[in-house]
Image 1 (cartoon, rainbow over the protein chains, first blue to last red):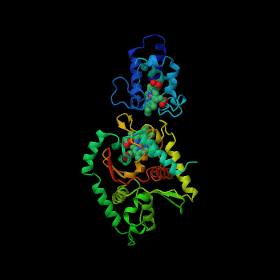
Image 2 (spheres, protein in one colour):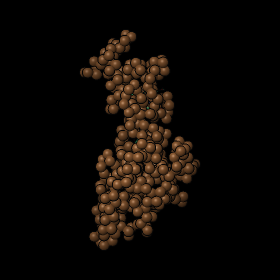
Image 3 (cartoon, rainbow over the protein chains, first blue to last red):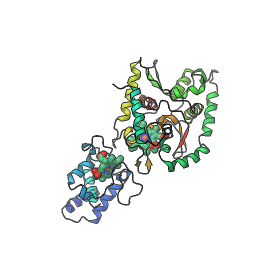
Image 4 (tube, rainbow over the protein chains, first blue to last red):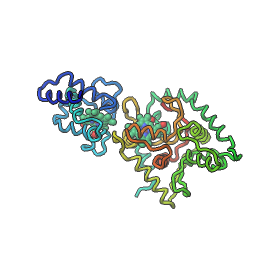
Length: 111
Length: 258
């Protein structure tokens, strides 16, 4: 139920320019949570503690990923860009749902 | 097709190119070869080794005669320091790779003794003792050229090492090869070169000894795959490949690790 509300909420808020703080916080939590994105395991993000160094720092996302589809693909299945990628295929292996990936992307675009 | 020896030379060359400043023999010290901060703490710990009692317990177990009056030395090579460096080895009789742990249990069953559990204290005590006796001896793993089953076992282990698995989709080589020296969160990744030289290991994290296969199991679980059994054929073949890659390195077990 809660998920549905989040999804609905993110769909509604996708169009307007400013995303609500709540949605961004959801995205941030999903990105950082160890059982979810755990992106910090491999990327430095803002002031996140003890970042890993397997992947490049996640910053200036708007400038580097003007194409939202490309970013989605990188998170959904990094091996589609790089067959030997050491980034887990979050969507393909069902670590994150499509909705969760959307929320994470909303957050990433604030970086 | 490249054989084990070509593989080994390429494996060694990869890490030498990646860490040109590190003397080759140092890779046997795992992450402490690379991480100088962690190394100082580790050297302090090794001054009063937390595995000392385990070695003593292993010596006692080793010398205790079986009910039939025989001892382990009836099953193993002489002198004792030659034992550890020869395992894992390919056994023509069973057509399988036999690790030191398996050989110990084979010896027990040949003498009508109950088997040791592979996650128990006894087996790591004995392997700790044997490693200690062999310190300074060089790993001498052989893939007999005249038995294609040995090469098959080696190749199967090699394939395991390079195959991505689990929900996180990682191969051993992803972390301990191409990412060695880098950080996953706060953990710095050691090189696959030198991994089998120093087991069993006392881990401060768990406060006990762990075998190489228990370490394999932990890493497989960490990528969210289902681990194989300790001493399964899969892990034995993996150990065969990995130990061959470290041929010529000195045995330096037991050791202590985070």
